[in-house]
Length: 269
Ligand SMILES: NC(=O)c1ccc[n+]([C@@H]2O[C@H](COP(=O)([O-])OP(=O)(O)OC[C@H]3O[C@@H](n4cnc5c(N)ncnc54)[C@H](O)[C@@H]3O)[C@@H](O)[C@H]2O)c1
Ligand SMILES: [Zn+2]
Image (cartoon, rainbow, N blue to C red):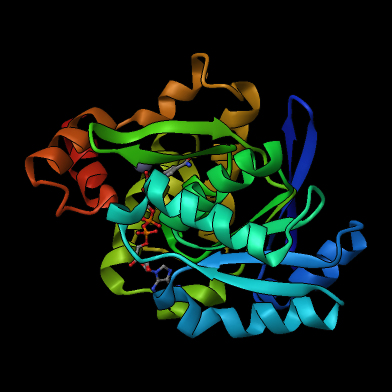
């Protein structure tokens, strides 16, 4: 099936979401067509890299890029300023310049951390999201919010950074643990409830058809962030289930996945 392209309008322009099986291996070609080249950084973690970094690096090299792998440790505990500082070091020693691309290959933790590094390194370099969890595909990779946690709380430091493009390859979900997939379904369900009755009813029937489910969930998020790019008001609907959800996450000392907290939060809301 041909990849589907979903355009996202932003205050400064627009970017495409390319969604389809195999788009990971088209990354180099798609970026070269948009005029990018040379050194680029691939930020990922060891868990994701062992499965999916190979095809991405191959694709970039085929199109003449010189990709530098920049691994960060796995887990929310590493979504920190210290990890970002480590990335700046790596970017500098690799010779990343103002026009060099930073690619995030991973779940929401990698996307948020790499995005914040890309937003701030040299006052901002081009950034590409390649989400590898269901949650990151339907939620975290779209909308331009990036950032890291402080000891005092989650997501307390950040920046709006619109990506150059988002590449969603549903084949990457084959290696995702079932519990992570279920956590992502909570955000899909939320998108169904706030803006897509047919999606909601499909989930109720137990119909999780890919890539349809991802495409429809993403479109809900796109509609909301286009209407409210800087979180002035309308975007609050995306927080459905999150007030209770965050309370559950905190009560469980963050041993609950975000999506698991949201799933319970949706029941309460
Ligand atoms: N920026 C936003 O708008 C936004 C929105 C929602 C959530 N978030 C953030 O996203 C984060 C949660 O993201 P998440 O749920 O993707 O968690 P995550 O990034 O921690 O990924 C979950 C686990 O799955 C592993 N993994 C990822 N892809 C895999 C694959 N294809 N195969 C095997 N393992 C894989 C990861 O290594 C990790 O261990 C939170 O920090 C949250 O604050 C951001
Ligand atoms: Zn959420």
